Length: 296
Image 1 (cartoon, rainbow, N blue to C red):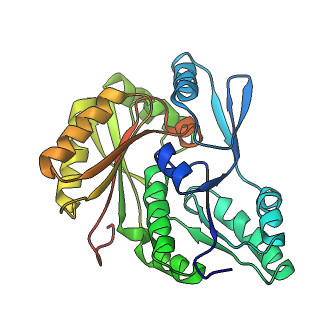
Image 2: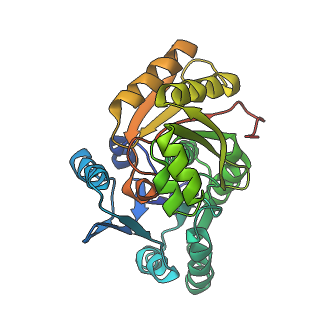
């Protein structure tokens, strides 16, 4: 096996353009979610019609839940590959948001001992959604440049904090259900049309750091944060994420292009894995800071 011949995996909570993932053979660990009484296994990037059904269900009052990945699931997916001598670079949802990374390490200990001719290396993204997508794109470019799996993992760990995530949530009740804000805060905030702004911290946890009255004010603040921390330059990589609210995504895209007309922007709909916890109408800007600059 060539040094750069290995498979890149993530869990399906990552948000990345589906055509790019298919072209570059990015593979995903399946995750389960429920919408009302329906249980669904999400094993690849969901098409827009399925995502719209999910968010319409939330709007109609259907409760949504997700299931974390067990060490057994990692073994089930990765063992057949490693048995054939294939190595795997796996990028997980932030350990500050889920136990999936720790579960992957348990599987890696077992499989690396059992199959010494192959390697399973797990990287904690310390990010989510489009941030994981940006890290996957880095991993693909590094593999194409000929980086070994070890070199690639080291690079990702050294550069993952260059990825900034700025979020706006439309409905506070989803944060309340997840235990991130008290019920009284959610009720009062919803009545006053308060929109919380969130970011991913350096340790990979989610922080509500500001609140704005109304969606437009919140989105303008996201754009101001992007402008303040933007690396700029031709081809600056931006991923805009939305939970079935294309109008918000288009507003953010126009605002980003006003700051940097040369930006390379992808717009993707939020996966149901994260969407279950933030609800419809959420939007985000993910961008990559300059070399040597890390998120605050």
